[in-house]
Amino acid sequence: MYDPDTHHRQSIRLKQYDYSQAGAYFVTICAQNRQCLFGGINNGTMMNNAAGEMISTIWHEIPEYYPGIGIDAFQIMPNHIHCIIIVRATPRGCPDFNSSKGPPRGVVSEKGQAQGPAPTVGLSLPDIVHRFKTMTTKKYTDGVKDNGWQAFKRRLWQRNYYEHVMRDDEDLNRTREYVSSNPLRWADDPDYMVSDV
Image (cartoon, rainbow, N blue to C red; front, side, top):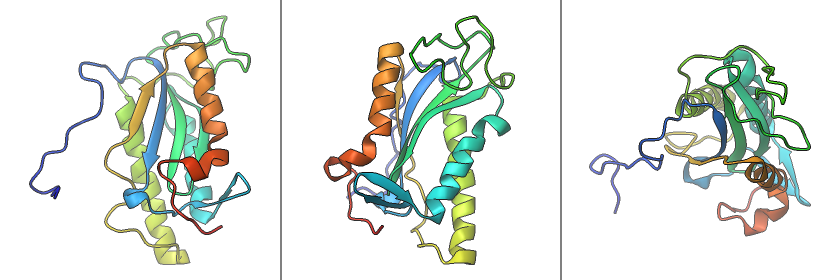
């Protein structure tokens, strides 16, 4: 049996890849033990509980607190989240995604004009994920103490997370569609667990 105190965990990040370089990244972060803490699915629609609303608020505040980091598609599920995070190393450094929806928030437009605040030097994808996990864990812990939210065991989020580097517009648009339609496929999701709505 795996024992985290005696076994060294291996990173699932790409070796030699610089996650602070400009780009768009699809990320999935799961609740520890796939515990359904953030709401439930009703007729293919995610119904956030108070914890889910808190997580949504923190997600949407990311560009305000971390200049140079943009946000795009986002979906809370009962026990995980899917999102697209944009890292800009320089105002002109992000890939020019020319989708029909226009560039994601925080991405350089077709004319080369930066969208959103000035870039943050040295902030990488792992930095943003870590800060998001830390802030949401703190707020969730407060919710358990102050509002009787469902408790979690040891940690709110799993240690690691899944990520995929967006390669082009087609990849980005396909991923946006996957994220937005995820609640419709909840019963087929590998992270599916029965949740209360």
